[in-house]
Every structure is written in C-alpha cells, then in structure tokens.
Length: 329
Ligand code: FAQ
Image 1 (spheres, rainbow, N blue to C red):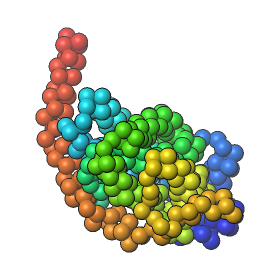
Image 2 (cartoon, rainbow, N blue to C red):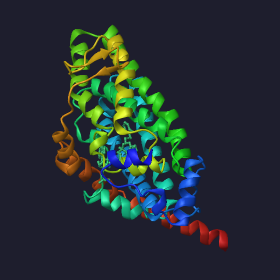
Image 3 (cartoon, rainbow, N blue to C red):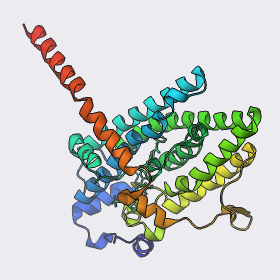
C-alpha cells in the first residue's frame, strides 16, 4: 500500500525500513487504529500537517460565516432569518472547537489567526465567491455544507483524537445545515414563482463547480495526500470524496427539478458512478493564491472585525480581573 501511495503522491512517504524506532512505533499505532492524543509522541511533520489542516479548516468555518452574514438582514421571513442566524452561529462554534483542537498541538491561536489576516493562510476556496441572491443561501447550505459533510464524516475517523472528536459534533450540525438549505430550495422550486425557480437554477449554476473544487486538487496533483493517508489523517482521497459527493447529490438535484452546469454529467452503469466534466483547475489555483472574486474583501472584513472588536476583549479581560480581585479580597 505504501509503495502505491509513494507513486501517486507528489511528496514522498518515508518507507517503514527508513523510519526510526519511534517513528515505526508511531506508524504501528496508526495502523492498529489507536488514536494519537495530545501528549503522545508524534513525528514533527505529523504535528505540522495537522496544524496546517486544522487551522485552515478553522479559518474556513470563520470566513465561511461572511457570505451568509451578507443575507441576514434580507431574509424573507422571521423563520428563515432565525434559521440562517443559527447556522452562522454554529459555524462560529465549529471554528472555535477547531482552533482549540489545533492548540492541543502546541500551536498559538493568535499567530495562526494573524496569518489569516495577513493573507498568508489558506481557507476553503468556496468562500471567495460572492452570494448574489437569496437562493444562494439555500445552495450554500445544500451544496457547500453537503460537500463539507462528505469530507468531514470521514474525518470523524482521523487519527488525531481531538480533531476526530471535534468532527463528531460538527458533522451533526452540518447535517442540519444541509437539510435546511435543501428545504429552502425545494420550497422555492415547488411553491415559488418562475422568477424564484430561475434564481435557484442560477445559484446552482454559479456554485456547482466551486463546490466540487472544495475537495482539493485531483489525487495526482495533491502533494499532501499520500503522507496524510499513510498517517490516516485523511481516510479517503480528494477524488474519492468528490465522486461520492457527486453521486449522492445528483439524485437530489433531479428531485429539485434543476440541472448542473455540466453537459458531461451522466450515470455510468459500468463504473457505478456519475461521470462528470473537467474541473477548471486554473481557476481553483488562482482562488487559493488569493485572486478569487472576494479574497481581498473576506480577509479585510475579518481583519476589521478583530480590530474593531478589540475594546470588547479588553473590557472582558478588565472585568475578569476586577472579579478576581474582588474574590481575592
Ligand atoms: N481551498 O495536497 P492537498 C465548511 C490546498 S468547512 C483552499 O490536497 P490536503 C463548513 C491545501 O490546503 C470547509 N485550499 O491538501 C462551512 C494545500 O495547500 P498547502 C473546509 C485548498 O490538505 C459550510 C494545497 O491546496 N473543510 O465548508 C483547497 O491534503 C458553509 C494542496 O492540496 C476543511 O478544511 C480548497 N478547497 O487536502 C462553513 C476540511 N483544497 O497547505 C460555512 C479539512 C486544497 O499545502 C458555511 N481539510 N487546498 O499550502 C481537508 O480535508 C483537506 O485539507 C483538503 C485538502 C481536502 C481540503
């Protein structure tokens, strides 16, 4: 299995015979499905890979609130507004669990957040696209949370204990998000006007391909996959998860009465999967380099939120100090 991974991955996976006794012992624990906990020995590269992935994941949850926050004041009813606010608050909570999981690896939260604010840190490409209509709120819930779940269900079995446990709760909440998004679209398609139905189709046309890009580059161009699979940080490859997402989403698309913007999308009985067209990887790489339609705006909004909220954090610390002194006296 390792030999196969070494061939497909861009980064080389160290074969067992080149490992130190500690590394070999670690790999045996991984192979035996024993979770790695914060205080256990781990190779430095394992720790760094996790800090990279978990911090990017946490930033994605936090930045992911922004495209939806854009629509809170324009929700069409009180019920929809409450649902949207609850969903956005859940995403904030996910970001906080994930930053905490990252801290168990010795990473500093302020330093990682500073990397986001300086434009150095990555976060999911999908959040660099604008949300142009109310139907986008349904499409984000259905497609974006739907893609996030396919990826995260597998991460519940990731080898690092704190990350895996955070994922269990996050997945429960993401599944509510996916359903509320789908229900919103179904309502517009079944009970809406022609203009609302067109709005749903337009949202799907714009978000379909960016949702497929969420799974990352194809396996042969994914530098981190081979090692992350060997360490069981990732349990399935980018392409396997992307295919699973497509296979489970197309029947839902048909039930909505909508289409995907992909003329090559069709069931392949021989493979037992849907075939699909080529992903525009140039666009993906531009977005993750910081040149997507909303990258600058997203980072500036986060930076501004931290700067303009500084007085709240300072007041909370001053209040906590006052209470401490009072209790001590
Ligand atoms: N966007 O070698 P690989 C959500 C980067 S949560 C940006 O394949 P890896 C909830 C990658 O980091 C969505 N960058 O990398 C929500 C690497 O760069 P680096 C987030 C991407 O790590 C819903 C380089 O490309 N979910 O949506 C992307 O093995 C609605 C090479 O790629 C997670 O983060 C991308 N799409 O696999 C919130 C899940 N794809 O660091 C609000 C956890 C790849 O070497 C509203 N993460 N890159 O410079 C993972 O499972 C993995 O990190 C992958 C990438 C699968 C994303």
